[in-house]
Image 1: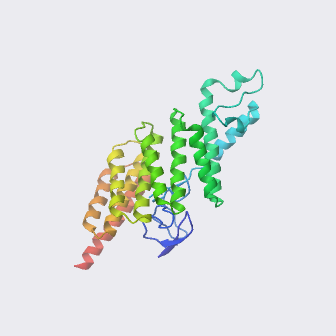
Image 2: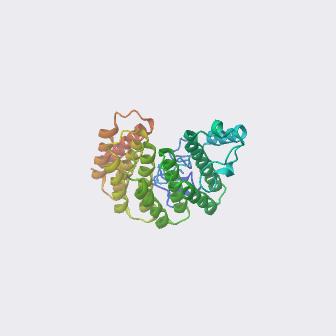
Image 3: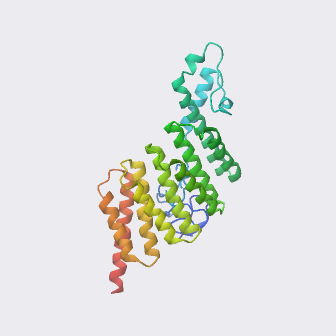
Amino acid sequence: MLVSCPECGKKISSKAVACPNCGHPGPFAEAGKEKAPGAARPEEHPSARVSQTPPPVPSAARETSRKSLKRIVAIVLAGGLILEAFAGSGKPARPPSGLASAVLPNEQISSLDEQAARALFNKGVTLGRQGKPDAEIAVYDEIDRRFGQDASAGMREQVARALGNKGCTLGQQGQPDAAIAVYDEVDRRFGQDDSPGVRERVARALLYKGGNLLELQGKPHAAIAAFDEVARRFGQDDSPGVRKWVAWALYYKGVTLERQGNPDAAIAVHDEIERRFGQDASPDVRERVAEARAEKQSLLASRKARK
């Protein structure tokens, strides 16, 4: 059955692991049915775009935060600051005389910078939705330029998220090599980070790398290696946001093996998902377990029919 990709709108098979046009991750729901996680532009860019949900693999889903933008507006009104004040060094402009200590205590500067980065991120997402990918990518590059050296966990997550969306957009534009290079950069810069939020971005980037390798470059073996890397490096992580991507990686490994004509190996992978995540409390992870069970039953039914 043909369905519309939630990211680029082109018609694709409902069985596709990821959209062959933009790399957005499946599974792809029929009209009227619930979409897979990451089917929305980040978050996730959510084109992170394998299937994310990945949804992206990798939607690989984009996250927008109107609340963050409203907080910035509130700060502007209350403290006499202007958003433009975040330009350059990334530090807020000097408030009116006599208000510096009251409006901008040192412990709040990092928070203000993070809100500015979120506002820029949302600007990039909006530009993408308006069909302006070059301008969108320029905004993500601006986030990296202005805040890429910030050591705070919250800001590292914002930068990693912006780079992930940049990769998704490049994949959408038919530049899988450039997209994969960006995903590798996320891994190189943040792969050893101990912050749960940043680890989630790295896992997602590796998943979307696999999606690009599979659907945009036709390299299933390399894609499976990328999916295995996600499971190997993050399989013991106790963060629900990270476990979600591990479950997605294993699921897409199973689907890829099935497509390669190896149903026994695919069944073994779906059994592994059940074993590792069958009792998981996270709704996102449980959804992948349910998908794996359904895939296994379908494979078993096909095997029985052939006998």
